Image (cartoon, rainbow, N blue to C red):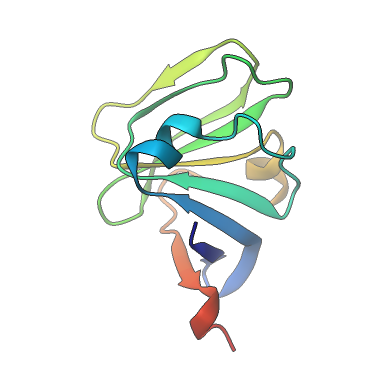
Amino acid sequence: MKKYKLVIENNTKINHVYWANNPWLRLRGLLGRDKLTTEIGLLISPCNSVHTIGMKYSLDIIYLDKDDKVIKIRANLEPWDFSICKGACKVLELLAGNCKSKNIKYGDELIFVDHKYDS
């Protein structure tokens, strides 16, 4: 699974963003993985809906358009819930509270920097 760093306006926000970009990785999502931390996220592409069936903790869900612009935020999606966003192309899953603490908001353009090109 490829790993990225999330940057907004030249400030690092999340140090490790894993990219689920094939059917198996998208289907698995976070199930069976270690709990997210404030420095780890999961980017799912293509995707416009998520569920938290089987999860043991809440998530912040960030819906992105084709240009990686935030078009919807669903903060604190609790376990055993569901969320959808018409028009979304990607979803970024973060530990609940990260949108607020990292000041990620509607309209932000998210930049994902490949770690192999990171200086």
